[in-house]
Length: 272
Ligand code: SF4
Ligand code: SF4
Image (cartoon, rainbow, N blue to C red; front, side):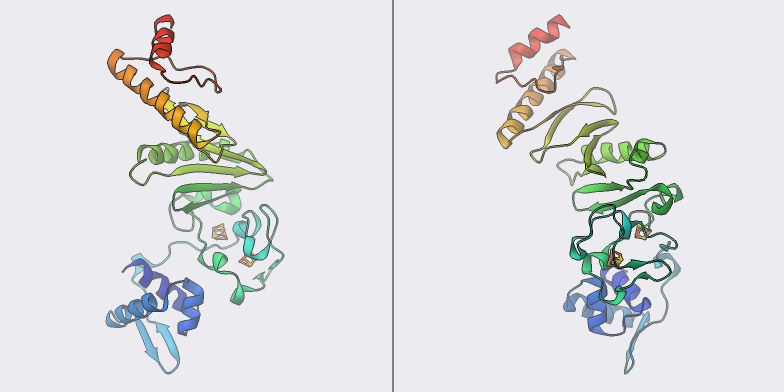
């Protein structure tokens, strides 16, 4: 069963009985929904009749493994611009005992949101209500938003090691759909490079070289040109490492010599 079919059948199971209802619940195009409906009918997983759509039951493996239950962390911790909800402030539409009071007309971003725990990517230590962390995936990042009641929680175990592991996976896949691992805690933002934490990464990017298997020396770029220069320096470091087995890594975060770097890097390496 493909993703569109799964989304459609979940929407129908959640109470959508019309094309409009399924569009609202899934955000999919009419054409994609029509295709999914036809395929589901063929597999006898869905019935369309005068009363609308009815699901006849999903195979067990395709059922969502988890439910939000007592959790309302995404309505509390995340920013939801569509309802003017800032980060770490309970949504004004959320009410104890009722939940979302505008459920049927909640914005698309609320409808389509599922955190990484709900998707089954994380074990129960990460249940957002308990962990104080909401993890979700975007196209090119793992995003971690931290409850401001426990702003340092992400640095604790088992969380930090898992985030460091994800970060390494994301770095190793650069050029092949790599991703960044980003943490937002209150007004602070962090980029993880393995176990190395980059505070307040700039929008221009961060250049880095490995120091150990899971730590890095990094430089935050202040412009596109700066990032380019930093990458040239790092390429030179890598070449010297390959040629001589090692290369001194400039100590300072601000250390940004103009090219050519090779003579300066070799001089530093000889003194090391
Ligand atoms: S944070 Fe995850 S588990 Fe909690 S309410 Fe949101 S989607 Fe559900
Ligand atoms: S609109 Fe509803 S689902 Fe969206 S954040 Fe507010 S309470 Fe949560």
